[in-house]
Image 1 (cartoon, rainbow, N blue to C red):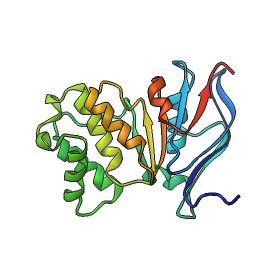
Image 2 (cartoon, rainbow, N blue to C red; image 1 turned 135 degrees about the horizontal axis):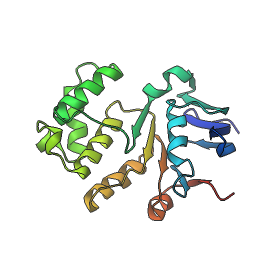
Image 3 (cartoon, rainbow, N blue to C red; image 1 turned 90 degrees about the vertical axis):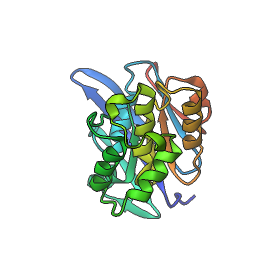
Amino acid sequence: MDAPPTHLTAADLAMRFGRRLLFRGLSFEAVPGAPLAIVGSNGAGKSTLVRILAGVLTPVAGEVRLVVSGQPVAAAARPRRVGLVAPYLQHYDLFSARENLSFLARAYGISDAGPRIDAVLDRVGLLARADDRLATYSTGMRQRLRLAGALLPDPPVLLLDEPSATLDEAGQALVEGVIAMRNKVVVVATNDPAEAARCAHTVSLGGR
């Protein structure tokens, strides 16, 4: 069977830190409309795998391939084709949400980003607080801003590392909607069984 025109493939990935082997021989494929969950105990390597998929960390063996609309994406360009949500992503506290996203838009090379910024802030429920400094934001609001940042460039791939952390019920519903996006490759690293159950496929780390 031919591969889908857009897909993210991991082939025989291995990763270690020092003498500690996190995983090896890890292979899977993620396609639009079939979200993939990465599950495992704390320390099993879920966040590490997400960073490898995003192209910001290099595995000790194996490779990650991204194809978008039938065209392979070079490894160096992969971070710009991915929207990442992760607890370690930080913003500038002295800037507003709008200013933080404007800075991110420039990094992605998005011109005339104002309408797009308003649209993603509205989607995550932050438009009314768009011009407030992040120093006034709760942890849940900061997580919503991470979601907005991931959606900002309308990427073909969304990598969500513990996306529901610190979110209230409405925020969790927002994450559910993102996971259900059928036009994107969605990968979710999670400790939440209900969140993993919303995904079509699962990759388990540790205990194997």
